[in-house]
Length: 430
Image 1 (cartoon, rainbow, N blue to C red):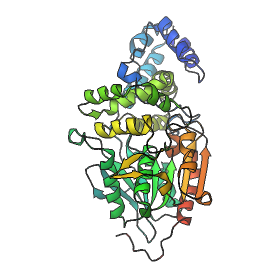
Image 2: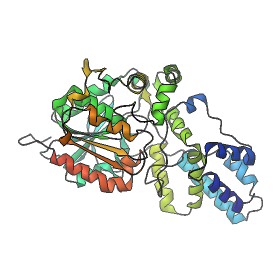
Image 3: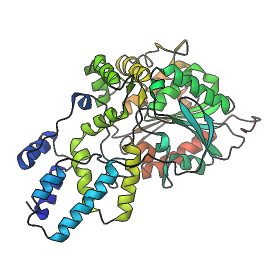
């Protein structure tokens, strides 16, 4: 098979509606190759479906150089011209670079306001007199730079552009061996410390798994949260029929415990990354590389891909205690939604959250389904006239770094936050 035959075949098996069976069957027949995931990989959480158009801008791309490429493809290039071979090996070099990228960096100027065992509290902009806006970034495998991905895709910049003087972000640290016993209470305690550092009352924005932690904080200390935004946040983990709910109810807790044991008391980020990739193996191991090959001469495309990979391919490790609590108490038993979760010594009730609240969900989000987010409407104590919600096109990562959502939705949320402020006479944050 020469290169002219190879690429159309790859496009065929990586089409959006190609079944996993069809993909694997073709690979078996054409390449004598079959992806054999480990038990740990197959049982991890999942990566969202790719968004249409720009795979990097929408946060959906495949992310592991398929090991069959060099021997299998090269063996079938015997009829190709030297130029095609050179192009192919140039592609291999670029693919290797994005498969093992350097750690992500912050591309928006900021200062570290506070350095705690669990996080660095980062300040963006210049504080004014209003209630501080605090973004509680996800702590579920990937870093907080998702909140300020780059100058064109920055949730932080969108909020500041809407009129907010400054924004603070919880930059959660990857768990070290010494952090393996940190619990959900540990993270609640330090989130509370961050709020006190900012004056004791904030507009709290919870992203993804940072949403349930933010809601816990708001339920435990209602007077400290002026308004609450829950974006792609699983408040009722039993709602809907997403894959995470299925995993939570089919995989025994002992499986997760074994993986934590393998990580020396931590849940290694590489385990979670393998799981996300294996939800859509055709996208993660094939389609992304076909696109990269076809755009290898587009320097902007390659640069944006490398930038995204620096975030995606460098997941954080989680403390084993924190991770297993989240799996058992939140995703298996759903105790927070049922009003039976104990946080910082008190049983937490979502009905104690009465502040203005904004709910944001993705139409095609298969990490946190819209039902898990919008279930909060009936669970919170917030009056109906103080509740706002939006359902936007796209998947999970697109909620936080998708061009359209950043440009159209987050400025609306920023203006909504400003409209909720009750801050007359409050002191300026130093």
